Length: 143
Image (cartoon, rainbow, N blue to C red; front, top):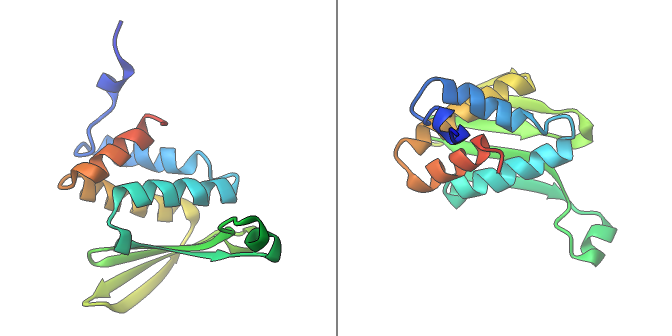
């Protein structure tokens, strides 16, 4: 019997970007779950300073010690900054071109395109970073 992992492309293969994008999108129907999966995965795959998460905490969240709802995720990768706002239940993505910390351009994108950009960035990072590669493999395998 063949192990299904043998059939999965490695992060260096072109098909893995599509697989990762699909894995990232599988929870997109529930934005809160999607945002939680993204932040957990990105925290495992990228350096801590590459991911910024903004949350909104209600009084009940504070009293219960909960972190609150994710409203915005910002991922900084080399010359790109990927921003996803999920406030109000309507996702909006933005891809920014950054040079030396200065945003040169901003481009609003639909969720599917934002996810694809993120998948490409994480896949690229996984080529040279073992921790990112492990997180990517876990995402691709659904675990």
